[in-house]
Length: 318
Image (cartoon, rainbow, N blue to C red; front, side, top):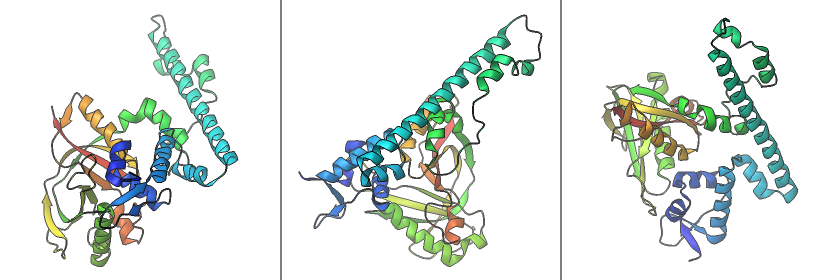
């Protein structure tokens, strides 16, 4: 066969169909349509390109630089890879230095004959010398340009601590579901029109947008849907094709991702599985598009203000 469907590519490379559509949206890849077939297909040369992109993303090359590598010449690719290796060297060196300094600090604190105040030990010459050249940085919050400064450290020492436990309150929502090709985009367009035409943000400034797969995609199957919920005042009427629903709320494990890193769902599921206090509660997984309602109101619908999404996995106490 000289082509693969979007579902087959998704299954073969363990990448979401949403990620594939996003790669196409930003111009990294192209799909075609087979006559009489509703979903995207990718020809052999494009499947190879998708595999290349996935490998480069696993090597933590930002999408913007992958685009440059795809469009540029060999010298540009070499420069990008050399820069990435240099950044990785700096990051690994920083992590190793932090680990050595922490071990030394622990050793000093455990010395039985130490009569110094615990926090004074932090100022010991050995600790000061080890940390002298470490950068004092705030957490990055913008895009992938500084990905190398944060992603590796987050994976090594910080990631587990980024999961929050949140209680979503009961609320009334306007809901819309679409099943077919590009379901996330289709429901987003309908919700965007509703938010603007109803001036929802002026009526309810704390309005929030949630989404979830409905029905869930199945391995190797192109058929799936997506449903959006936007919170509204309890007495608000909604126009068709939207439907008014009640959401019971509940307890969730929350983890913030940069759009479109939906592969992070795997990490969040594993975090809940290993957690000693909480276990999964079998309700809908939710994705909250942060600041989306405000962005839509201000005519900035593209991925919210900063492209951040909360993955929300339902949990309950063990």
